[in-house]
Each structure stands twice: as structure tokens, then as C-alpha cells.
Amino acid sequence: MADTDGLIDARDFGTSAAPAGGFHVKGAHAQDWGLQNRLSRIFRPDTGRTVMLAFDHGYFVGPMAGLERLDTNIAPLVPDADAIMMTRGALRTSIPSTTSAGIVLRASGGPSILRELSDEHIALDIEDAVRLNADALAIQVFVGGEHESRSVANLAKLVDAGQRHGVAVLGVTAVGKDMVRDARYFRLATRISAEMGAHIVKTYYVSEGFETVTASCPVPIIVAGGKKLPELDALTMAYRSIQEGAAGVDMGRNIFQSEHPAAMLAAVRAVVHDGLKPEEALELFKERSAAGTAAS
Image 1: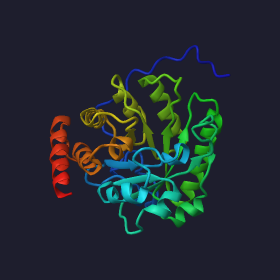
Image 2: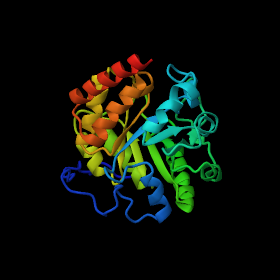
Image 3: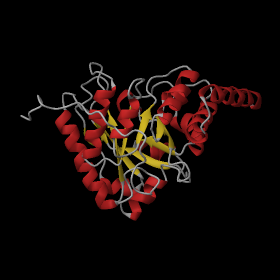
Image 4: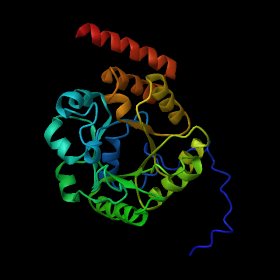
């Protein structure tokens, strides 16, 4: 067992230092052309940021509120997202092949919400991902979970396959109900994913020390939206995430469970790409909501 008694807590995260490279996606300056091109379909080259719309929830919870009909509830939102995150089944059945959004496919699965969620396996072959023109593959990493070692091994295998074919891998920090959600844990979980080769890491925002999480991760961090929040709270979380070093957000419930999903997506985009403050973005949300209600 590693000797952890003498470890010294990290102190200097260099939060004000610019990342090395020159490519607009952090940590990807030495990647192959094809992988850089795929990353550029996820992260806008002019801002280096992304607004990802996540609707992969059905792979373990079924048709939750807002996802009853992917073709009518989600497909109309896709043109306004930089990237979309879903299962291959959802992509083939419900998303028009004319979309220009970056494609992020859920690549892990196994248990439903009725079982131990960390008991996951790789559930997508790289050849099918390439066939679907995927830009990235998403996999859960359960640091501290019952099946931690397997989930890390799954990530490593997926990275090997992705590197062979120029497809990026998104490591998703999976937080169990009994795990501590603080900056120290997220520094550990995100760094492990990046060190194992993930090209992007998705994690949760914390109000204290989040800038140390983004600074100590050598690849872009995008922030999970998590549970449905009031619109101003969700926009505030997005704003603070970006201000503290995140390269984007991956929101699901805070968009598709909003009373006005298209308006909320527009407001989130304005925060991430245009730097609108939460209160300004909320006004935009209200304006778009009123316009949409009047049009209908």
C-alpha cells in the first residue's frame, strides 16, 4: 500500500497562470489532427467553451420528466447547443442526422437506478462510435465507489480505443450519495480521470475552492448541471463555474425541465459565451420565454 502518511496537501495551484499550448482546448495541443478537429466541434474555437445539452439520463432512470419524448422534447433544442450528450440509441432514433452539434455518446452502462450504479461496464464499441461520427465518448468514473478500480480500468480501455481512432473521451465524475462533495474530493477525482488519459472531465461545482479543481486538472472541466434548480440559481452556478476556470457546462434537467427550455438554453449560452451576469441572463430568459409564449 502506498505511504500516504507523509503526503503534503497541495498549496500552489497557479490559478492565474494560462495553460500551455496554443490550441483552444486545454491540454490538447499535442493531439492528432483528427482528435483536435473533433474537440473543436465540442468547444467553440472563438471562446474555447461549450454548452452541452445532456439527455442520457434514460439509460439508467428511464423516461424521466422532460425526456418522455426525445423527438419532440429534445430534438428542437439541439440546433442551439454546442454539443449534445446522449446514448447511441437516442441518437439513432431521435436526433436528425443533419445536426451540426458535437456528438458525445454515453459509453458506459449496466445497472439501473434499482441497483448499485458503480457496477458499470463499457457498453459501446469504438467502431460503432466511429460509424456514428462521434466526437467524444462519455464514461462514468466512480472514485471512492464500490467498483472504483473497474471504472478507472474502463476509462483507460476507452482512452486506448479513442486514441487509436481520434475520438475524445469524457470522464464523468460520479458522486454517490454517501460521498463528500468538496474541492478536495473533486481535485482527486478529476485529476485521476485526466491522468488516465481523459481529454475532458465533467464534474460538479462547489462554492469553495472550485478554482483549485479547474487549475489542477490538465484538461478542460465542464460542470454538470445536477438537479433542477430555479433559473437564477442555475445561471449563477454556470457563471461562477466559468469565472473560476470551467470550460463550459453540461446541463440537462436545468434545461429540459424548465418551463421554457429553449429560453433557458439561450440564457445559459449567453452566460458561457458572452459573459452575461446571472441577473442579465435571467432577464434574457424572461424575454425569450414571453416571446415563445406569445408565438404559441
